[in-house]
Length: 128
Image (tube, rainbow, N blue to C red):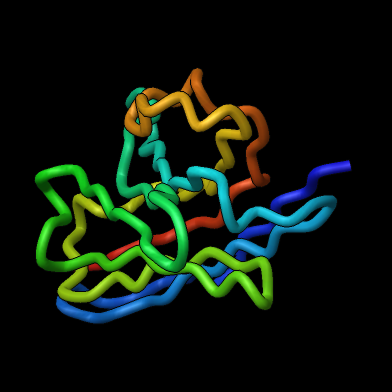
């Protein structure tokens, strides 16, 4: 059974950094698209970043415009773990962050409904 467990959230001041982790289990995830989404209070869930496999050891990374240059998505296949390094955090980054996996590699990495399994979420709060 596939399980995704996020960790690493917390309270940080604006300008600070956090690294989120998503430990995956139940199968090997190296060839699947994995992503991060977030949901702020009163707002819809939104795409943050994703990484897709293009063959061999090559992966592509995708980001929503608001986090480009500040966030970095990465994966450690040996550990079956997905990461999101978040730098220069802003109050508007405050949200619950979720990781997810698309077992069909749909190609629509920004669409939440394409993902098959989700973690329980981890809270990130950025104070001004």
